[in-house]
Amino acid sequence: MSKPKVIVTRKWPAEVEAKLKALYDVQLNEKDIPMTADELKVALQTADALLPTVTDPITADILNVEGKRAKIIGNFGVGYNNIDINAAKAQGLIVTNTPEVLTDCTADIAMLLLLMSARRASEGDRLVRNRQWKGWCPTHMLGQKVTGKTLGLIGFGRISQAMARKAHHGFGMKILFCDPYPPAQDIIDDLQAVRYETVEELLTEANFVSLHCPGGDATRHLINEERLKLMRPSAHLINTARGDVVDSKALIKALKEGWIAGAGLDVFEGEPNIDPGFLDLDNVALLPHLGSATEETRIGMGNRVLENIAAFFAGTEPRDRVV
Ligand code: DGY
Image 1 (cartoon, rainbow, N blue to C red):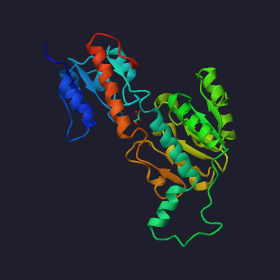
Image 2: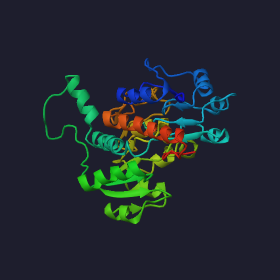
Image 3: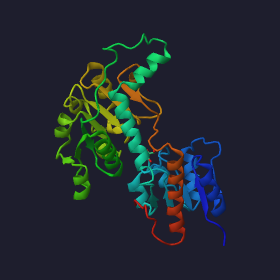
Image 4: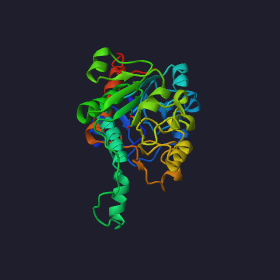
């Protein structure tokens, strides 16, 4: 029997690509150049499985292409807002994602940004590199203490809970969260977490606010000018979720005018073309979407896609089916 045809849209870790080669008739993307909409359409027409990632917009126009051969889209990423899920559903396509394997590494980056923002780490690094540091003195570059402070989490899924564990058990932080679907009571009890009914209430209480909700229409600009004004002037906003959850223009204004003290961002609206307004601000720590960027995690993500498509080709239900 011939092997199923699989098309991978970007370069993956070598270890996972080797497995793909052994198991499938695979088309890899060794040059790692993003595929165009037309190329993605052809991929759906010629492969049994398309394996895109979070930066490939799989739009309704692409999904509605005539003469599709593909039956499954195995997304390399836990977020799948790059895929028009309604169109995929209407076309009878199965979509899978890669949860769990990136939980801790993404939570680490959220915690890293929280610490960087609180302790002015990017600004300090720039000062040293620019040879402007004049030496230690009692009032130089004072940031804010993290230990014992209050962390407000918007969205309380796996990554958010992992951050809460690090923050609560490691830094003695008090945990607040807002999520319409709270986790089991034993998780809440372990973290001594307090549930808030509204984002507004949480924003007024927290010293640090970290975003952990999915991207997409439902959460677009959830953090807007009005809500930023509810935050404390000493508060910091951390975003490792999706760029469009925050209105960039409003955040730049908030950081410039001191409505909040700082921000730590790993994701951006329109990334990698980030709003230049962020670049001149000292009170924002910027990372290039590094949440899941560890060797272990990226291999884990690839293996999880493999597991999902293997289940599909074996005629069973992929464990990470989202549609
Ligand atoms: C995801 O998987 O959704 C991340 O954003 C990539 O790290």
